[in-house]
Image (tube, rainbow, N blue to C red; front, side):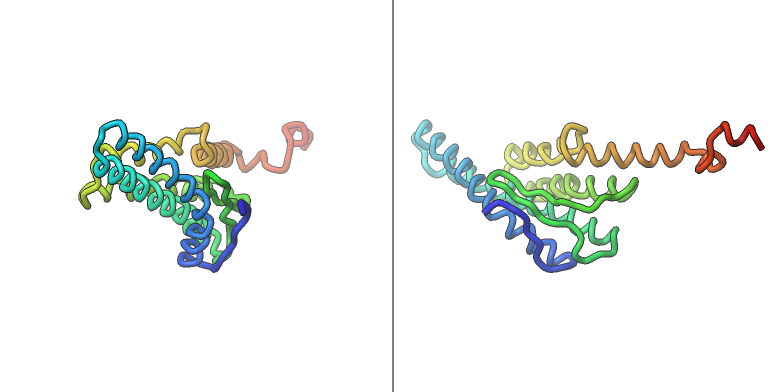
Length: 184
């Protein structure tokens, strides 16, 4: 079942594509959270609190994952002015967006949109009643995606490098070499 999914176009198509791709990782995530909640319930002798916390943790993780990836796909489609750009990919444990090659600021905006949406989603769950000890670690997980050894952070770094390279190129030197300049 893992693979590529491309459904619909625009923002609603992006959400539909991510939702369908998230089914398999959601089942894996639910299994992990419910197993941890069950173990905690058995260890404490209280069934209600650990399982409730596990279900809340699952809901926060899944909703923020869906918003994270939908933000990537929506921003990508908006920047490229192509309502069908990008493909949602999935595996047993994750969802990600495969995008066409982009340059500079497009890389930066597309890569940062996901983690920012994930952090915002988690942060907004706290006033809605989700315990901060559940929401904050999940939000930090999204923020960590901006470090260069994760895909989003790598894309930001590539985008910044492309912008720096573009800014440091002198217009006079484009398309000619110093040797050719001296012969004139």
